[in-house]
Image (cartoon, rainbow, N blue to C red; front, side):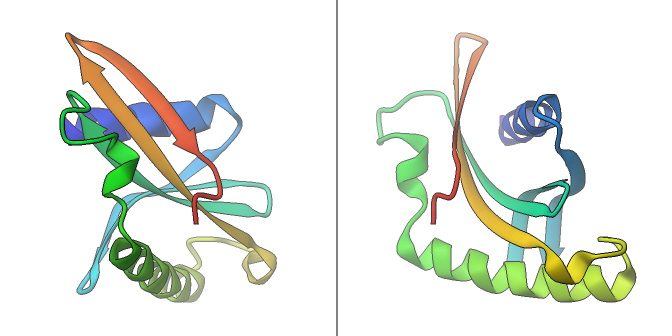
Length: 119
């Protein structure tokens, strides 16, 4: 289910002119679900996929502790990506944005709500 939600979010960004930089990037501290880029904008997106809102909306599960961890992960990603050349030329001037994508799958139907600049 989570994989389907992440793929749908990547497709959502690509349809809006972004290119995929990384999906499920991992280091010892955790994982960033989706990293996409459009010109000088780099977006780190936390994807939350649910089959109902019985336990709250998907985006409500992004706690302040999760936000702190994602910011640390973003710093680690940027350091690694710049040193490896993954981001290419001009990566020093990138703007970084944190989005949350709430994906709901009900009876096979998928709905995506991307909250840009969520934190």
